[in-house]
Length: 378
Image (cartoon, rainbow, N blue to C red; front, side, top):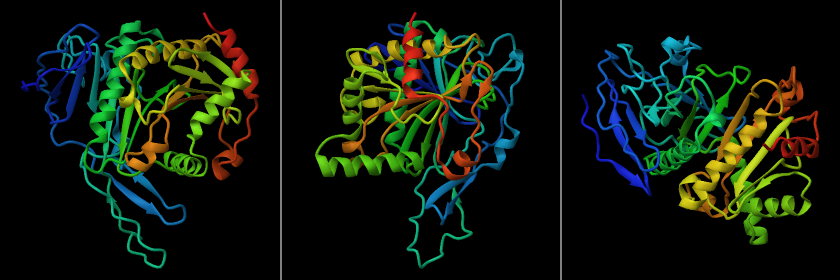
């Protein structure tokens, strides 16, 4: 049995840190006004922690590529009675050593990054070749966010209070990981549906804490910095104002958040959800903003599921600014929800133009998608 750290409270939502048998951290969050799991006992003989992959520097693109060969043995679509994300009950021990819980975030047993922390070497000048053939340890952290003890369902099915607890977990882990040595970018996300490539059916998401800004985040940060320097205005704020004024791509609007289908959407289903004020990440949201986010985000994913007769596969990606002052000044938190589903029985695959050139060709207009999502309101 591990000795837990003291309970911490964010407003009326509390969390408590425990440790699993191999030393991995597990953070238990409680729904508003209740207390998290007080004690856990993980008796599994897990042995040495998995991980210890590597990252390699691509001189052609200037990007880092993670290599995690140990993930080939990770759990893949197990039956319900062997799900590692369900509570530990009836003598069956899972990754969560408790008979019941609300929301749990724990270090991934098969991480793409970590468990070691540290700083990557600085890429050398073009004339040097010192990083060629010399990989670095895959520093970082990969965490699993379990939304509910129930094996079936999705984020859309959660009780409103549970959805709010998940938002709090994202915010708390963003703040904690952003302050961890060597972490440059924190990325919460959810993959939903086998068509996306999920390996576990249990409702859950993940958080990657990279030792470098992920390529898309780096490009967006560079454009946001340049726009702020040239105009004195935040790029995402201008986009939100323009979409609100146009109106035909808006999906929903609240006091603190709005959602729209972007003008140049790449996917047949793509929606951006963002706060009305400039904040760099989820941790910077106020309590009322987090309250509304839980409601509107759940509304959005429910609309997505009502588009078809079967659940819609999607990737929900929280775009947070890299962990440095210049990017935090220019960046703007937003959710990008995308799905490859272009019809009831059709998926969009990334073929030659998209996969090789990164040049997307969409089969549906943004205005058509926005109209369908507006009509999908309950």
